[in-house]
Amino acid sequence: MNRKTFLASVLGAIAIAGAAVASPTPASAEALPAGLAAGLDRQPAEYSMTAAKERRLMMMQEANRQQRYGRGGYGPRPGYGPRPGYGPRPGYGPRPGYGPRPGYGPRPGYYERW
Image (cartoon, rainbow, N blue to C red; front, side, top):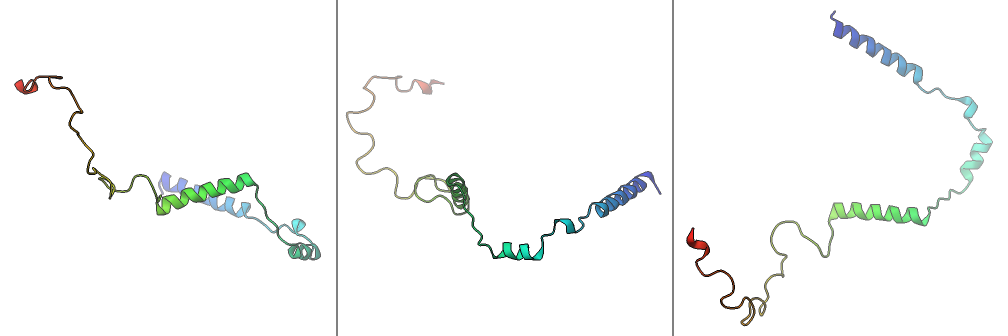
C-alpha cells in the first residue's frame, strides 16, 4: 500500500469517527413537559416586523422582480438601435441660417492633401 492511499484511509477513518462522536443525541433535559408544550401550541402566533425591515424587504423583492421580469417603462431596452417610435422627426435637423459661418474652419480639401 503506498503512502497516499494509507494517509487517505487514515483521514477517512478519523472523519467517520468524528462524525459519529459529534452526532446529536436527544437531550431529555431540554424537553418541555407535555402540558406546557400543549399550552404553548394553543397560543396564537403573532409576528410583526418594524417599518424599516418592511421597507428593506420591499426593496429586495422589487430588485428581484426587476431582475426576473425587466424594468418596464422608460430606460434602455435590450438590443441595439433606437427605440421604436423615436428618431428624427419632421421639421427637426439642420436649418438654413444656423451652423458655421461661411469661410469659417479649414479650407475645402485641406485634409485631403495627404
